[in-house]
Image (cartoon, rainbow, N blue to C red):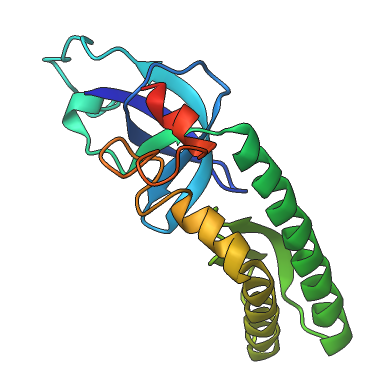
Length: 191
């Protein structure tokens, strides 16, 4: 089993991931996390034959063999993924701007730092500085619902969710089996 460290989200959270391929640092990948299907960036791949550290102390970080991966890398991003990401990013920027304007107009003291969007388009995770008051909660709920309804158009959501079929993009999934023209199939077959 290969492992990689990946960076996910606006806050740059670092996670240990299982990885079916050897990928270069900086490569953008699609991962499955507890939040859903997300975009990540490879920080470092670890050779599968890395020796175990037998004298682990409290000062030393755990080796991957002592930690459980929190995400799994599905595949490197394809050209089609990058186009979808640009579209998602445009909608995310609109959601951030709308939220900031609504917060200012409401007189809320909440400060929106940034927003993470899950690649499947179904979730926005808003990061605030400090506490969030009732007005900010109401505003973010409304903005999130509006954003999610935009990116959940039938065709767009189906492309993000399925590709050519359920579990498309995963080695065990139906990648390429349901549609010979699937653009994601090229990414899957590279493994």
